[in-house]
Length: 353
Ligand SMILES: NC(=O)c1ccc[n+]([C@@H]2O[C@H](COP(=O)([O-])OP(=O)(O)OC[C@H]3O[C@@H](n4cnc5c(N)ncnc54)[C@H](O)[C@@H]3O)[C@@H](O)[C@H]2O)c1
Image (cartoon, rainbow, N blue to C red):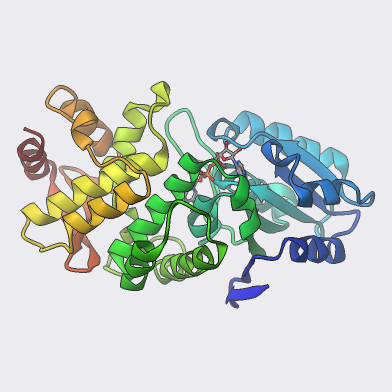
């Protein structure tokens, strides 16, 4: 396994057997593996199921499982199976399972070790990094949670062989975000990546660069600062992305990564209107199209629903009274800008008419 970051114990591997050997060697009867049901036919899961000293629980990986109801159901199940303070919980799944099991690990017996094995591109480059755990409340997404670092994160690229292409694209949306807020090398890597066939070697480089970029912005662990190196910069594309996503949530017509793609296009256009000379709208559009992500925001934000979009934006964690902290692109970098809702609305009306 290759070390991506020593301090945070983040490893990456292309070898299918390495992860099995690691888990077999490091787990015992006090430990537990919780995995996404969709992976029952995965070779690693099959081999782990054949080991009779390790307990496995399968759960469904989707947004609905990040609920108080499932938190309590799964936490009770784990306690009934029997764990102690030295137990380890291994999660194998996408971001929904990682967020939920991270939260459970941080609260059971006041915190037990969590070994995270992300299986979607999004969870490999984003949700497994930085130590945010959480579940959803009726009031909003990710409102109940903790900052709790996994003990180890092991990325095995072979999981991506079965990932549906739409999910793959959603992961690339976050990678494109990293390329625009900070990392020019990633822009080149993405331009040179042939998206028609899975190339694990090239993907490995893209994933490592993405993780390094995210780590660069998560030094302020508890997200208390608002400077140009703060965690907030990772929200490029997310102010409008979240608003579009939540307005369309019940129709399930748009996925998170797709909404972020539209959010990035809107927010880079705002950067342009504010004369920040972002580099560049055309390059961003080309990359999004290459990775099968949407760019036509006019279908999702128009004169009919603009008030609803702004209602959502006003509920954003980064909104303060009549202003919002929004992430824009200045040249090659993400920057934090405070802007009033009125000025923002004028710019948006100008963009959509
Ligand atoms: N904690 C953080 O910092 C952070 C950051 C970004 C996103 N998130 C969270 O991550 C979640 C989204 O993560 P996601 O996109 O991985 O969602 P997900 O866990 O729902 O996975 C997406 C789909 O892929 C399936 N899947 C998973 N691995 C697979 C594989 N190897 N082969 C085939 N199918 C597979 C899942 O069953 C699911 O249907 C959201 O809840 C979001 O809030 C958290």
